[in-house]
Image 1 (spheres, helix red, strand yellow):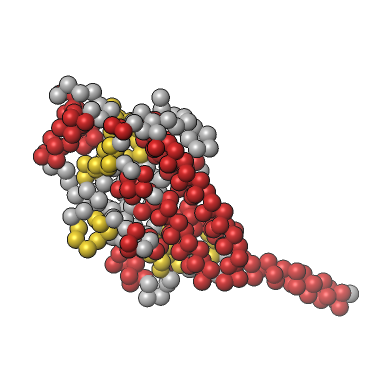
Image 2 (spheres, rainbow, N blue to C red):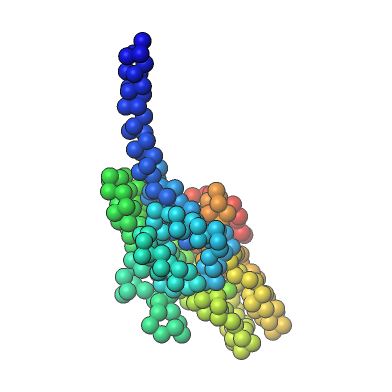
Amino acid sequence: MRATRCLLVLLLVGLLLPFAGQAEERLHLVATTGMIGDAVTIIGGDRVDVETLMGPGVDPHLYRQTRRDIVALTRADAVFWHGLALELQLEEFLDRLSGHTPVYAVGEAVPEEARLPAGDFAGQFDPHVWMDPGRWRHVVEAIRDALSELHPAARDAFTARTSRYLAELEALDAYAREVLGSLPAGRRLLVTAHDAFGYLGEAYDLEVVGIQGISTESEAGLARIESLVRLLVERRVPAIFVESSVAERNVRALVEGAGAQGWAVTIGGTLFSDAMGAPGSYEGTYLGMLDHNLTTIARALGGQAPPGGRLGRLAETRP
């Protein structure tokens, strides 16, 4: 009887050991922004647990780590952040953390020749590369390579998921060219709360103007507001846009200023700039975030786009 029990125990241990090994191989990762967290989750699949620090409505330009963040970052197997001076307040901490934890600045995988200059910030680059799916593919591939380095046994799985995701990016790019290409020649001016849409404009031939600069730390003065009001009136711009992670006051000031000069400009919708939508929603994914932006811009400025977006999944539609 005792021998039988021992044999059963050994058999159970033998059966459970492979599952224990799989549990140990699951990576516990932290991502700074929602866009990066989404890509790491998709590419990593069931081999990763991902915690994202910055949720909907959070401005990464101004974000400072909390005590909870510090605990999460120091306990993570690896950290994925954007770089290019986006999470400026986190840089010093992440630099120290990199001495004992793998830290990947995946936004910096975009080649320098494909980056836009950061306006008045000499020698720096515009960090908002996720606004162009063609450039975002570099970030996705960098995440694949980092995960493969962290978990070599799952390299093939990461590669397969990345290939599928890159195909989705190509489809999104084609949709962007279709709906933004439908904008009338005189309606190709995009005015937003801050200068986060330069890559989108460069990729799809839009003129882009932000009230604030590349970083939301910059403030728009009265002269800036007045010059933009004149632009709206002279160009007969039909709509301007607020952003989910930036205060609306400057955009409202433009609407009121144009109205005072006899031109009725509307708010064409809320765009996702530095943060995605609600977790669990389509807009809470990178693909849904961009679909929402592209569809909202096209419809508000006189182009042709389906109310539900590329896949008919958008929660909000506009006439």
